[in-house]
Length: 501
Image: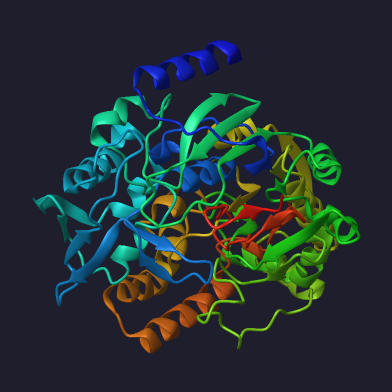
């Protein structure tokens, strides 16, 4: 379907559904620039950061993540867990209305969760809910989950991107006329151009949102996004390029707003494919890497080196582990012991439209060369990366957004049965499995901290892959925007934002 036909069909559908849209003044419309077109409007099926921006504005979860990364109730008013952490009961917030006017109830939650759990839906959120054995509506405002294992952080999961509650009577329209409970309502979508949102006049938080409308503009070229901000045509550049930070700091019309995040980039090594099936080879590569230099070369200083997806800003970060300087002699010795006295040649795929990750690949290539690891970089279109590279190549560069909990950031990526691990490095260590299984079962904060610090030491020793750094989230913001604060989860929190007249 062509762009105009899609946009018109959506508009016609909205009119047919009789969704009331308030009139709004152009001057109270916030304009946001995104770099990539949205491929999916169904929140359960979204997969890229630009889509998550839209999801956060239109939908809510049972819980939500505050800018300080604490988890608070959202569509759920409260929750309780049984002593064995296997039965969780959620009381819903009363009087919440979907955008088409119907009041949300427990059956909407049940339908949403069952849909995410259905493999046919194809939701990446499914991997976070594998412990759910049943979900039941006890009454119109109460939902009970029965789990197959003890899980201390279960309520936190529902703050994640794909876990947004949808109207059970509008599921078939999510890809064309999405209906949520969020502060903004879907109006129209022109793929590759813009998505229009209007204020939800019935939003359950009194006095919010303050804006009348939000326009998400798709501007692929980073230089064009920054120029539009400087010209006053855009109010926020989401995830602005790091190389533009110093220039924007000198602007008279806009400012830089940044925050530390658990989002990371890294070099993925297939632990079941030669030469990386030998831990000594992985250790040799790690011995060539200067992570502090990577932060400067790749992120222009907008980040911090780390050992795993746990960032230095997190209380569980293992501060006792050192960031060792490159040791080429050690790397050569390890390679010789592994049967590669003369080193080896290896291709490494990088996503060609993700220049940050291309820079990472180039930097790692140059660092590894003195040890005899001869990396040949192959640029692959990002659109085909998942199909042709992820989980298939022996060595490639990729990156992943912040997760709502330590468990969802670590377990799927490092446990031998983890969903992302099976797709990425295919790493297995019984000691790591035992630690991660134990972490799921304990509510004791001191014990959890100890567990995850031991985990970091183990992955630093065994090198499943190279997690290079935790990247800052940086937005370019026009001076007329008030009340905006960047979030570690990298979506846009706009319900409290206003514009100077």
